[in-house]
Every structure is written in structure tokens, then in C-alpha cells.
Image (cartoon, rainbow, N blue to C red; front, side, top):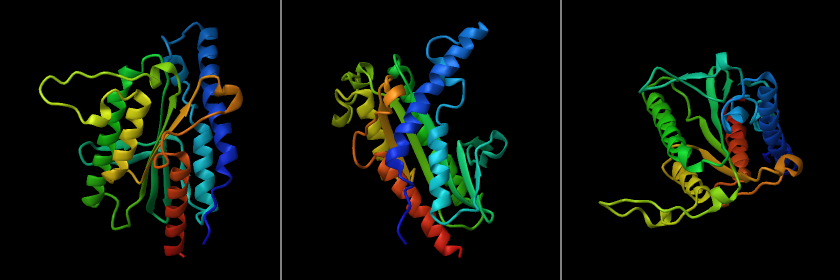
Length: 246
């Protein structure tokens, strides 16, 4: 059956505009309250930055055969068991007839301190997936097909994220693809390898400048990590599950 990508090409710019607007609104609200966080943190703690993508993912699930799936977005229902720790809080969980259909992490990073968070995001992404798949292997979700596990990252497209970065490795050389790679390039490599190592069903990097609050402009660094590839993979997985559960 043909996949329904719910016109993601027109809806993605709206999600991007909502992302930047939510950050601006959160910072303004905290300034008015007199309790503003330092730096860019005020734009993060509002908690609504990725809602546009949540809505789009929800629509893709519903339009590809699982209209009655339980799509959890509230914190109380977003916990899954882990193997190396008791539980992990996800951003979106899709359940249907007691089966875990999908779990998605939605992340973002804006400047100016791109270097401060890249390693943390990398370790978090790898650890989260490894913990879940080990729990899956050990039967934490019962006997069911492999779920869709997704990782979606929005990174500010700015000089700081585009500038080549040098690393120091005094004992052994780093892999050559990292030599002089910008933080956007590093995130792209990360996403590709997360999929290559089968840690995530799909991992996507979206680059967007701060002034996209009015235009919704965004881009990808490779076809493999594009948002189109992400939504196509998700839609295909959902359609397959729907056909199996008929």
C-alpha cells in the first residue's frame, strides 16, 4: 500500500517556525517573571520546542494504518523499561494492542556553545538505544517484532556549527572523517553511524538558522539523515505493522 507522508514538505517548515517561536516565547516569559535562566537555557526549559514534530509524527502514525494507536506524549506515560537502568523517559511512545510500535527521541541544540553539548548528546543517544535493545533482547517488551526507534535532532545552522573543529588525540589518530569536521558534520556522522550500527531505525539531523522563526527554512546534510528519510522509514514501519495486525 502507498505510504502517506502527510505532506511533510509543507508541514516541516511550520514545525521549524514553531520550534524557534517556542524558544523565543519561553525566554520572554522568563524575562517577564524575573527568573530567567542563564544563556540559551531559558529557551529550552519551556518544554514545547519540538511540539510541531510531535504533531507530524502523530499524524504519520494515524494515516498509515494505526488510526487507533495510543500515541503517548504526556510524561506519566512516556517511560519504558531499560536494562542498565530501571526506566527511560522517551519523548513519544506509540502503543497498539499492547505492543510497542515506536519510541522516538526529539533533541535540539543551539549556539553559541555547540562544543559543550555534542559529546553529551552523542553518549546519551548511544546509551539510550543500547539500553533499550538489550532490554528488548531480554524480553522486557514481551515477544513482539522489533519496534521503530527514532532519533531526531534540530541544530542551529550558524557559523559556530559550520566552522571546522580541531581535536587533540595524543596517543592514537582519530578517524579521518572527523578531522576538521564541523559540529553539524559530526552530528551527521553520528546519525549515519547510529543507523549503521542498528541502534536506531532512523536518525535525522535538521539544520535551521535562528531567523527561520519567520521563514521555516531548514536543510539536511545528507540524504541518509534527512527528515524525508526519517518520515518515510516511520511510515513504512507503521504500515507494515498495521498490515500484520489486521
